[in-house]
Image (cartoon, rainbow, N blue to C red; front, top):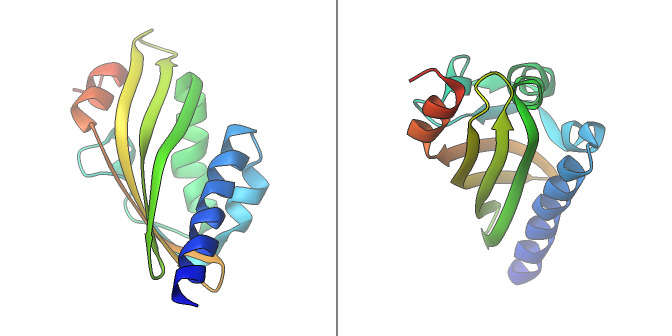
Length: 138
């Protein structure tokens, strides 16, 4: 049964990446627990309001800003590893910053905590120096 839990949690997280890729913000936000604790990587231009508590704060403080700031922004998971209620994904961000015209191609690690089918915690790790350079906030 615990191995089955890993599969379910991994599929859950993969489905969120798929929904985000298709512009389905409602599905992503609907999977977040009302009290979700969402943290962008320290040093990231988007960490200025950490922690983002609740789906609305995540939508306004992270998703809307990223999609406004970047053209063709993508989040591509390459590997998912699950242990209990934690799913860790390794992947890459890509896109072009609208204001600077700089291209982003940065690796990431996301640590997701899933409880009762909802995301209760998210922690991002990424190349914050590249984000600062690309966004002109370095």
